[in-house]
Length: 601
Image (cartoon, rainbow, N blue to C red; front, side, top):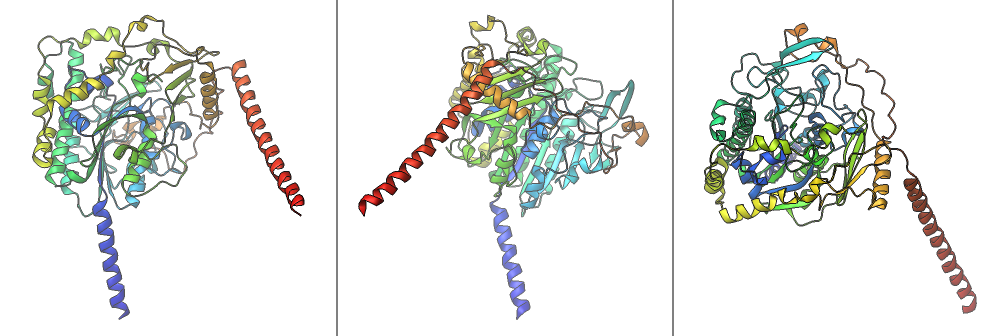
């Protein structure tokens, strides 16, 4: 009898678990690498057409003020942990190929939490948050399977990484199936990763929810000293682009867009599209100049990858689900929000102290966002920081002037076309995603609605005559302050006009700076040389090997001003005054009550 009861209990528990899993949405999270704001066509650009991405945008939720990291490792660590990178020592430039660094093991990552909720977790593509030690690898951090590359960038055809390390050229393979190197793979990287993602979807056991993280290399430059390597087929769609390098970059973006169409189709093929959350983001803006220039465009925003300006940190982001009402969300959304938001969508919650906010109800309903500010970036090695609060954004410290004043005006020549471009609505309707949406979900393209949304997403109307005003650059005694809601191009400095706001935000930045985990200077380890391990970039440091001592945090990059001190004194004085008044009021109430009691006798 007892055995029958136990068997019945197990049977009912299994039914309960299956019922719970059936309700949990699948999650497909797609990351582009170094994609420019101006390089998706739903933002208004007519040069590079991205119809599959656009269809997700028009039918989903566009995060119009999505803030990410200034580099790949920074953005990915924030995404996976829900914490500001400066708390992890992951701020600043991405991890070098021969650098011993990774997300601390004390922090669990998003796939770990989702696996606890019953998800099967897969990573296809770029990892980028630690590979020097075996315990940094993705299958040790919550992913059931991994297929891709561990470092910052690889060659699109050989899957090799080449890096100069202490005067020596290190080179080798960076392509793995779980922890095993893949020697015999051929094909263009974007297409290879897409094929693997489709394979994961087709083989997935639908009795469990799926978390598939697809982190593309495109349109980042190749990591094998050959910069722009699109599939040849993708160049046909961009033959109208006059500038040859820009045309190659466009080919990388086109191949990325085609990949997304294939993934949507494979979800429909398995009959799980209806209950799948699809997220598409870029890890940061394009490096339009510099040694890793990919000829991406962040127009009309200021700055490029690796800077605190909008052209880097304000990035493309879309969330789609069949049951979500399409809209453009104008509240602040930070990359740290993905961890708690997706866990909430999966039916869980994050109890740990993190910086991210659960914005699932903000995305799915009309619930106001809980996030009103965000630490944009702290770079303690270069000595600058940026912070957003409400409509305002502050930048302080030693920014690089040669790229911080960059608006891409000289880049406009590269955006010229040599012949008539293809019609946008024709390309959109003919896309794989549009076809799937129509056939499977009965969602047809409404051209009038599309053009209305596309017009509203085009921010080039902010380009005004004040572009001729000299750009503000922060100094040791003064930062730069902007009202981003009316001046997203960061042209009109309000440091003196809104001094109270500047003082308050500078003090908030000082407080956050005091909490940072200092970043060690990026050093290349000679033991990382792939020639020591059959020319493969595999872990070279033992898990228990001690790291060098944590450096002392540098001083805040801006001097304390008299105005800041006065603001702080006034703030504390007013707080003390309020407490004294409350105390006196309580004493008065007590005395009145006591005396009243005497008279009642």
